Length: 293
Image (cartoon, rainbow, N blue to C red; front, side, top):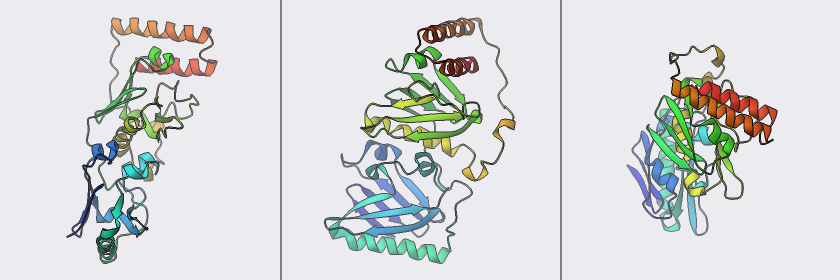
């Protein structure tokens, strides 16, 4: 087995799997610690690069396109320190880094791992249920539906729509952009009915506006990845989602649901009259409330 142990984490390769374990040092980002160990099968790897530098070197594992739901969900936007496929290497361990890189390259040649995009996810993504508290509210996913509970600091348009519950079979994709500390980020759940929505994240009842702690908001990538891993693979996106049958039977609304519905519609109407909501925003958020009931 080839293995390299560094402050930021440990990489071990046994000939068939690259096992990446985050370090316990306080400098390791919260996202990396929370995401935990990643077992990458050799068939998901497209290459590995070790780049020596004057003080430290860097190992980078490259995965095949479409093999990992984390990379697909985050679109390469994870900060380098939070990326599990990057490892900072002390200069006195450069020989070990070069050795493990050579071992992985040799195994790729022997196993003739293809370079083209994968047609299915080869890594499972985070286990469910998973919940994260962000600057805009609590978001959770249990494997079948997403639930968003808005915080007291969320835009009042969102609070007026109430908790958002989105069934997995209604989702098309998850769009995610991290909060950089200089610009807000967002996580938007795109459904078949909202795919053309132009609402900004702070007013969109299907989106979390990420404007608070960068360290904490980065954890929303866990939910984005867990959902992405359970959606149809990108290679099958040509399927017509509109014609996909609904598997959940409709549940008749109770009388208390009716009262809540009327109250939220009145709140939205007041926001519209006050000019807080444009005509388009009012129509979209009203439709979201009605769908929720």
